[in-house]
Image (cartoon, rainbow, N blue to C red):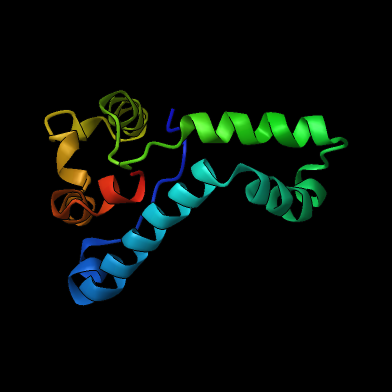
Length: 126
């Protein structure tokens, strides 16, 4: 359905906390960069924090988890159209009356777009 992390809140919260959302989005992009580019440190973090929760039993399992997650994290975390479609299809099952609604209207990507347009994300990976 949706691979990776989805940040979810209400539009009223976003409108009243724009600087916090801007900082959260930048931190999210920075975290993706760290995870994708600093594998050994990320593996150590996963060993310490994910192993007890997910009951991983070997370094191989930790590395497999890392590889799976690293593959699913996009450098630029825009929602993929197939993920939006899947989420909307699930919402339609519960609420058929939203059939005429534009599913793209539910996703505010302008904070990621600001970072992207500024060149910030591209500079992280140079």
